[in-house]
Image (tube, rainbow, N blue to C red; front, side):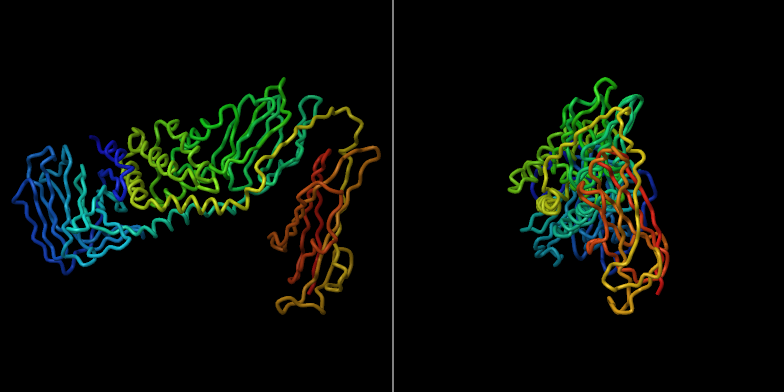
Length: 557
């Protein structure tokens, strides 16, 4: 049985570490000496060479190696390379070589008798495992291992000669690593693109979106080669399906580019694409572009929450973090992974009833990398090591699922959004393009600041915060509407920038309302430092173009 096939078959074995041991042809890293360890290397028995030390007795079974040459087994010190914090290499190990530096044609059995090592007398929740260091690698990998607690014997099988050590795997450290890496994204949101709120003109028709964006999506409408295109950009940690009436002619989903180093991007996108039929999808922190035929412009979008995508993205981030510098191998048949998304959706249900299916689909899907002709030997070996660790620590995926479910729960309030595409003829008698916006600054009417002149203030000498005087500044804006125009309601977005251009405050209206803003307790900004400040205003019009204005003001001490 091949190395990768053996690893894939063993994925579901509890408390067993999957492995595929290989090497590159680079120069091996140096090693520390095994100080204080007396050794007695032996090569007299070609079929079972041994090494005896104060802490272990090692033997290698070469009966299935496919070679008749004697195998050399020699002691080696601790690995002088990076060892992840969830692994503890407890002492020295062994190096196995043939005289001609060849590799076995079959497999070798490795056995560490650790009955004399007190560290293995009671391992508690730790999981004993054999780790290996292949030539040119900067990290050790975990091998398929079996621990006999009664005899305190640790065994493994390999098809590549290397250096091997007995080690202890810390399940809690694995769980913390996986969950910690995966949960860094739920609070992230993407910045508001400039195109939000803009209309698109195609011929004599103007298209606009109602609403122009949602609480979890930025929407951009634009003309594209005589037709209309809509960009749907994620603004939350959730995943969404996108359906259109009428159907779009083409769609172009984009998965967050940071995933390109985690797993073959085309494969990851195929998992999603195969799951949505004639619809599209917006992955967490991703986007999709919908293109329409000139004679079939869009009328309505329906965006449906799919939190399973959040869990799936977290999975890849968390599992990648076990070996952050080594990418996943390619997956040849990504379509075979489609069920992993269905399992993720089930696992994200409040009851978590699909957690068992999710475990199985994760193992099956990631195992495909081991069979891939595209994956490098190194990628395949470390994918096997990742699977080994997940198999040994089944709680890692359970904890990851629960943590992601809890982290995204605040964002799961509304499961469906409907966006209508409005049209109007450019010849309509509406002078919307002549609308203007008034923007002014002031100090709040509370005496906590002094107005020296238009847009010129001084900090108060009455009130302090944290021991410092301040000016309680504010702004106001209104819209001048041309006679006979119908611009509908407005939505204002205000940023206040400090002397260095750094944003010191932001005020965003969440819905469309009367066309004025500011001047209230909810929009006052305390300014402590002297300097020139800038108020930037953007007003989205329900039925007209976006309006912008900027006003500077000066604060003295």
